[in-house]
Amino acid sequence: MSINIKVKNITEEQYNHFFQKWLYTYGGATDVVSLEDYIDTYDDWYGDVDVYDSSVCPCVMCLDEDIDG
Ligand SMILES: [Zn+2]
Image (cartoon, rainbow, N blue to C red; front, side, top):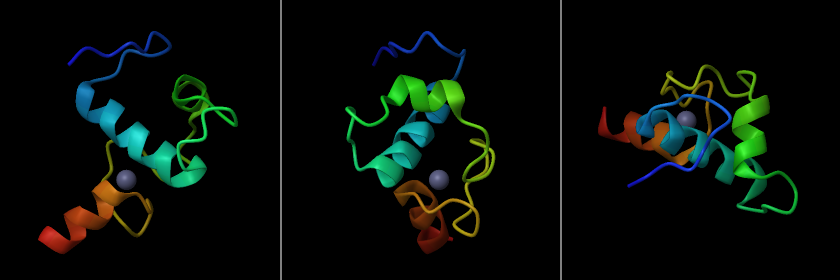
């Protein structure tokens, strides 16, 4: 899988987390804020992108982390 994000140098895992945060926030509405813009302007709205904790981030990935332990 190639990542076509040029705004920041991020790992695929971080990209996936940004994607889930963005999906939760905007429901995939790219006409509101594009994923690239979201990553570019992200400033720990839901905690650091490397933090997977449902107490700070409401995205699906973090909720799954909690369920799985
Ligand atoms: Zn999350």
